[in-house]
Image (cartoon, rainbow, N blue to C red):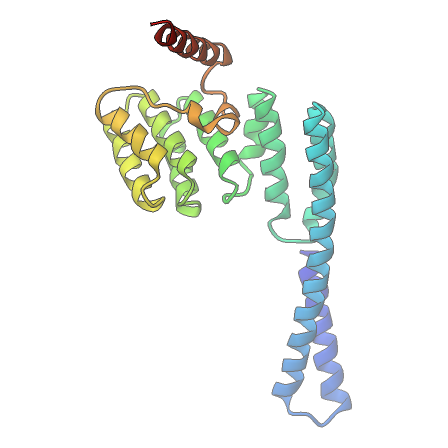
Length: 241
């Protein structure tokens, strides 16, 4: 990337000039060159980070105001920044894919999510769901396995993985995933509750994760409203008694 190329050029220039203009030992010339390389790379990387931070703040404001299309265009316009720094492009792809997914434009989302950043677990979860909906079970499992290997301590990710396995009829695998997730997350209470539900043949309760769960579009909002209404009505009947 450009930042690395510039930093390497500075290293070669500094080490070369010291070699010609001074009587320092070659290893000292190389050391000073490395210090110059590190400083320049740090400063250039920091500049890119500042630009990305400003972009993400703008995107967040647009999303809060319901301007998803504008947010996506802002991110797409930022893609050339990826030429300067490693991993920037994949992170932007994850963000763009996630926004398309939130809009339920799953086709466009899939194109971007495939090229996304592995450590961005929500987008990895979305990608796995896309594979599930395309009946590509092996790819779904591979994607989830990659996600949980990179983000081991996120309870919702383990729950999501097991939920999808259960949805495609892999009940025993779902239970094993939940047991593994329970160990990795330090015995998370919600994870334990859903593991117990699976073991006893009940449905997993994913609504406890709120909007973080709803973003995956695996449960219709209308169905959730009905469940909440029934729960409220049930409480009212208890009060009346």
